Image 1 (cartoon, rainbow, N blue to C red):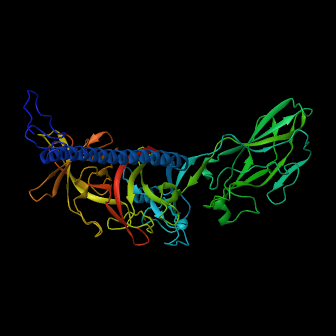
Image 2: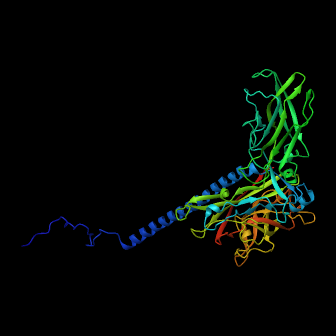
Image 3: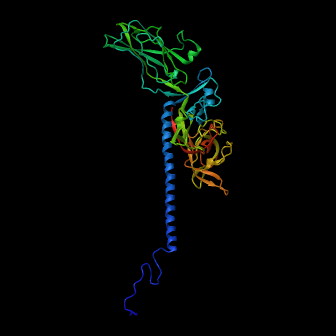
Length: 507
């Protein structure tokens, strides 16, 4: 059967072109192009996420560093003050003092590990940073003198209104006689600074109780000896006695006294206190006067131990460790006496990276330049000034480094922080710098080795540049910095990264 061709086109099958080729899929080239574009997008997102992760980590480190620095400032500011020294005879010795702690020189607060240290038990790693420079004689002592941690004046005794004192007022720490029974208070701390406790005020009252009509203060001043019951060389180091001084219009008993136990030992559970006092009623022209209160107007206390290791570590939760936390940040401290006899502290904050889940971070701060266990490293640098770049720079100037440091040029790399130590043996002596400096740019030789690190600012001491009068010369200086690797007490090797350095005025 034949059919006649009409004028209408023949319908095409679905999915076919005029030439009969199916078009229900993309061509290979189109797929490749789309895949390439998609891959570029994914790579961009990965780069974005990676950059965001790096920035988040950096921001977290900065936040933790600020937290650690603020914590250090809070702790150090409470227990640190001006530095004082007593020799083997318990006497100030300016010559020995200046030799052991020269003015304007940065020195390390050394780490002392507590007895019973167990490398496998982090709970024992509570060693403290302590003020005791190298070569200090055995019985001699260094200490910070800090302000009283409690509100002053301190009321050692406050008589209840219902108690009438007649006759002698006697008190011993063990006997606790009337009328002082259970009303004698302790100091807030141990190791009260003897020289700051100049006098004690005994306030008396007259008139009918409970509304006295008159008050009068009798000043008890320090005496050079102790009452016979206490007059021994050992007690002379740890106790101080006070006797009444004359006061117009009163007659005081010269046999009265107050003995204060200074609690001169580093025991937080043993506080300074009244050991004994004898205060008779005061004979005045108007009759008997009662003891109303015993007041310490002012005192300071001594501190050698500043902060424990656990208190200067910042941790992050980590279930892979036995104690479920991993140290991520720590700080070390330096100190110096300035030329005006004030005290400054430098807080070096750095990130720490554990080599394994069982590793324990116990740094041992020391003054030695070759100690692999100390995070703080003393280095020799040559300070110069680049006229073309209008910037200060440092170059490494030799000097021994611990074998644990693989990169001897780490002090020239970006991010390194330097604090000029100073040199008391130079002529004239070179003071330590007032502020730290940071490497912000590094130049390299043809082999890719760092040769020069440019600084964010020029280091200065006492307001002057080290390259005075004009910055056209170089000067070899000693500086403190954070080393890139450190060996912990358990033998593990930790990576360190400097974050920040803050200078605190503490006394």
